[in-house]
Amino acid sequence: MWLGIPEDLAKLRTVRAISAGGVVFRAVDGRLQLLICGRGEPRIWALPKGTPLPNEDLAATAEREVREETGVEVRIVGEAGTIQYWFVDPASRARVFKQVKYFIMEPVGGDTSQHDWEFDEVAWVDLEEALTRLTYQNERELVRRAAEIYLKGRTDGSQP
Image (cartoon, rainbow, N blue to C red; front, side, top):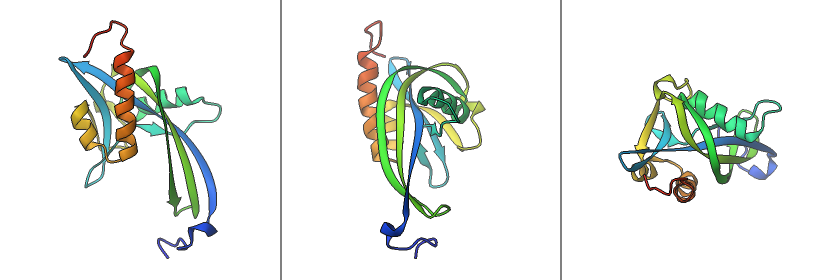
């Protein structure tokens, strides 16, 4: 037994969950920066994401969740891709198959000091440093791909 969960995970019911989040980039002094969120000790660094409200589409969910969790107002400039993973939820005694659709975003206002309670810290970090800080490998891979898409799509053709 682990946290009241039978060791035979096959006996657990399976639940599907969908979330949406943002890969938020900005250019500062010629460097590309990523907005990341941290909590706990040791610090877990992740991308902002969350669950849709009733009748809310995934793009609106991503914009709302980024705003709530980071304090930053954003606009969507592209799609980053989807991450899928499994975890066990001890509260519901279920195996959860989660899909998170991420959008590439740019800031249009707000301030990281206005982030909500879900994270202890929200930071703009140079892309290379962010790739070492992000806790989850699947998020690091997504960010690498999203950065390539973002840089190719800059309307003025410039690099940050």
